[in-house]
Length: 573
Image (cartoon, rainbow, N blue to C red; front, top):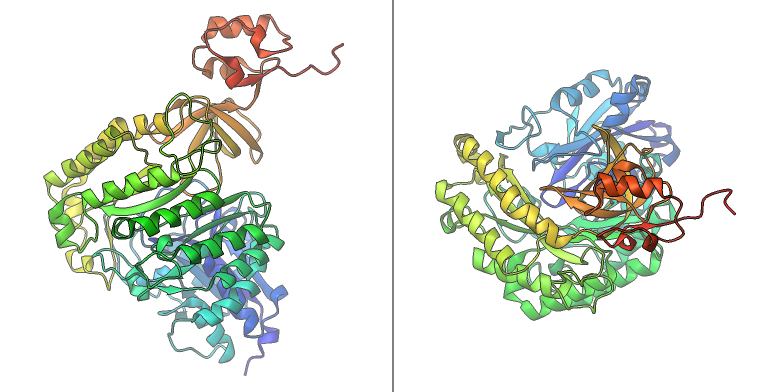
């Protein structure tokens, strides 16, 4: 019998992306935290548990010794929705196999990878279950498997689902893992679980495979936030649920009192948090219980941080596709839900709460508190050429009504065993590939760009933008949060720093900004000409006539006080 106290364990995070769970950096998912907590609960000392990301292993081959020499190596990963990522690159199947081949000890694989593996992490793909040469694959919850495997002396386990009482312990016991993440503490956002499972059965979605909704108690979630906060975490997202409005209820009907306790409690134990965002909100909940939903949205918007997004799973505005795939919301219902969230959450700091949507030149210069995002999925059963037009018409209706969407997420289906789409496969997505490509570009041009200008007009201030990479003389960064805007700054700034930014221009899915406030006495030509209304001639004059005591000293057609200041130069009289 193997003594748990003697075990050295390595957890490798290959990252996850599920319909209601995100774990690609700068996010850290619940899987490594809960698995570490389960191991500690089973008797493994915390200081004998090593946590590594797949990106760390790519960058430093010396770290593979931790994989090779561990008594137990746990791989956690799996993508059940496709995406594009900036902060990290999810593990590919060949890399996952290499981990198993390298490890000399017992190997355990778990997470959404249990639903299936494709040739690559991309849309329009079919998947199949594959053990990828691991000794054990958790068909249930990997954290429960890790606990039972250690309890058995590494002999085996029954595939089972963990319960909320176990998570009450494991979430707190595993919080220490975040301190080993390479992004800790400044650029790390903790994905928080409030529930999992879903009462609805859309054809493509893996979330119902977790069963009907099972809610954690507010004090459990709040206690986990407190543990993470005490270990340096300042950024949190309530993303692990199918519908935040249904939290603490029967799985469908909103429970504002539970939301009030949850959000108020988080604010109490994490008073200096930097981010409090969410992810999923079911539009059918909003339209079936509008007054309760309005109350819940007001509570969220009171406690969250600006730029929050409530992702709406419309998936398709085509009635035929809705019927064929058991989608639970019509285009009309989704529109009404968009309108309600705009009214209750679409105000900006400086506005009176509940007075959204806040748009126009007199709106405060911050992002709105809470806006809907729309998910559109292609390659579903019954999709036809008219489907694409239905979706375009819906998006145009939202824009023409003066409403705002935080983002439009367009992707192609991935199919998994256990879902209705598995029998259909990805052939519809393949057949419509070219149509999908041209339609996606049309959405970017006709909806995304003008919507972004409404959402974040020139002069909007984004606080705490973390600078991540350089490309073609531009520095790109993002805020922490749900679906943050990608911000490009003209010039190459030191990476890893955090700066406030004033927006000056818009692309389809990204924005251009300058550091805020921009110092007129040291600003470069690139920075000055990025400001709307400042051409090369004016920028040159600004540089020649420096120094300034105040931005109002500059003669220009644009109000520079929205973007700039004039700092006293070092050594000046």
